[in-house]
Amino acid sequence: GDQVEQSPSALSLHEGTDSALRCNFTTTMRSVQWFRQNSRGSLISLFYLASGTKENGRLKSAFDSKERRYSTLHIRDAQLEDSGTYFCAAESTGNYKYVFGAGTRLKVIA
Amino acid sequence: GALVYQYPRRTICKSGTSMRMECQAVGFQATSVAWYRQSPQKTFELIALSTVNSAIKYEQNFTQEKFPISHPNLSFSSMTVLNAYLEDRGLYLCGASRGNSDYTFGSGTRLLVI
Image (cartoon, rainbow over all chains, first blue to last red; front, top):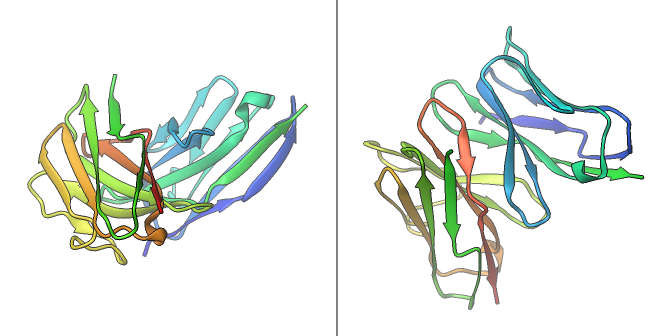
């Protein structure tokens, strides 16, 4: 079946630094969505992309528009409140079924 | 805006009993509803996808006999975990979509089995 490979699995950042998460897809995907799961388990949608890039504050996401086989989430100037587990989920063409990556546990330290 | 409410937020059931959870879409028509389970320390596994005017499609390892789902209209869905056992514990998420669009997820129902 469709697979989503997310990396890294865990990440520790100092406040003020930048980093990037990545999801590779084993097949061409129609769209990708990025989430942050908070400590209570709720999924907060960060970005939905069918192509190109989107930016929101210190977060920026990109979806490879050519082969549609990977997506990235960039975090700029990391803050303590960015800590949490980040998931990407991608939908292969036409089936409306989102497959989740394994998640990245991000910890931002002072 | 588009919101999805799930209830209960948290529930405990005895091993071998059943538990029903509900999902309500507000502000949009939920053409597709997907139910996921996040087992402890794991990612989200798709249980089934329900699309209006189509049969509910269950993923491998999940069956209608164990996780019957109802999607009677464009704003509501429910799922029951029948004969719950320890391995069924986790966070059950409902995601709803207009179709051909992004998913909005609820806060989940956390199931503990004792």
